[in-house]
Image (cartoon, rainbow, N blue to C red; front, side):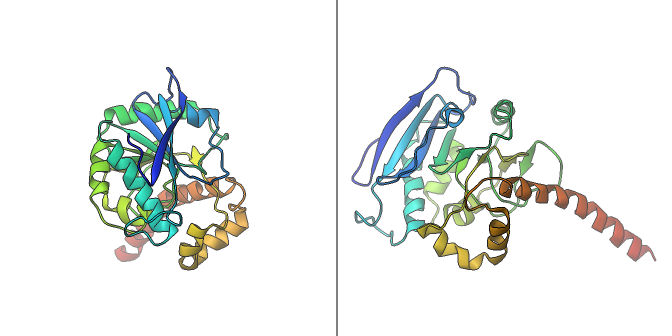
Length: 252
């Protein structure tokens, strides 16, 4: 991986016993002047090596085509995609990612087994999405994805996304992929405080903001994330109930 005028890479952790043996490397996206510290021992030990990608930021340098924080984040992702072409599976964190201590680290081993046996493009360790209605441990995502803070990308997915235009990394670029999965529990989460990035999209998310304020998701990952995943479960229940009701109605 090569440093450039916009980004620098820094190795922050190595382990011989990663929780995800089938992930080659982890990259943490952070800003040069960020006060966030990526120190969680669980997250640092998911891959054999964990690097920071330190972003100088679009306000401090002239990045072609970058005029706001959303475009800057997308540019940062694409720089990772460009610099990891020799690796197979790559885990990309945003620096606000947090391990959800409600769940055992054993679950990561289940994910590791799955990605070793499955042809996938991305695997999220925690996101907001609509999924194929079943109760499998590994859920197939059929919608746009909210929350790109902790995702495993295959080599094929990174190549495609590097060459795909789009504004938001999650709702525009990742949306173009098929074979998107997530785990049954939100293992890695983020809070949603007021930031420059959030100000750009929050006006279009009134329902989300109501739920966010109700659950305190701007300051704490729980109960916000558990509530989001319970909604998945309700979908699985409601769909067959609605089908049964419709069958009953049309039989009359």
